[in-house]
Amino acid sequence: MKLSNILIFVLNSIAITFLISIAKGEIDDMQKATTFLNEGRMLYNKGDFKEAVDKLEDSLIFFKRIDNKRGIGVASAILGASYSRLGKYSKSLECYAEAMEIFKLFGFKDGEKEVLKGAKYVLNNFDIHNDIIYCA
Image 1: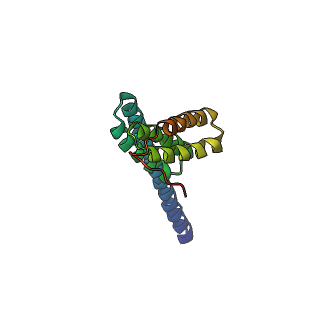
Image 2: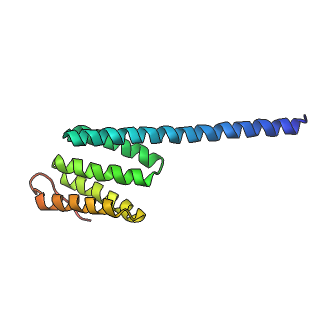
Image 3: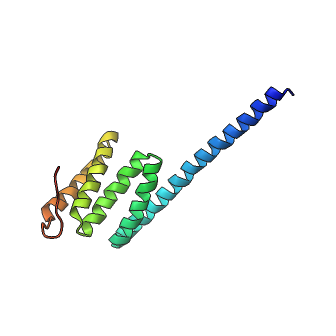
């Protein structure tokens, strides 16, 4: 085997190993994002909104790291609902806005409807003394 062929083989092996490690990192991040999302959903459904926010924020970090728009949309929508339940209305509306943008991008009408319901609830129950919304 010629030296150039060996060099090409070694370089190809390194490239393949590098690509596998990149793919593995994304798989690990996706798995973490999904795990945090599922834990956040369960905590939300149990009424533990503070803990749900923590898990959903972690989920959002990983979904954003791998640029998974659908995951970002779902996590943001549930975060919006969680923040609403905690009385953090401006944060809730920020999350709903991010979710809405993504749901519109993908044409996810059911998601859009749920986000609109949540945002409407926040706007109807907004307490100016507990939270302030600033519009730019």
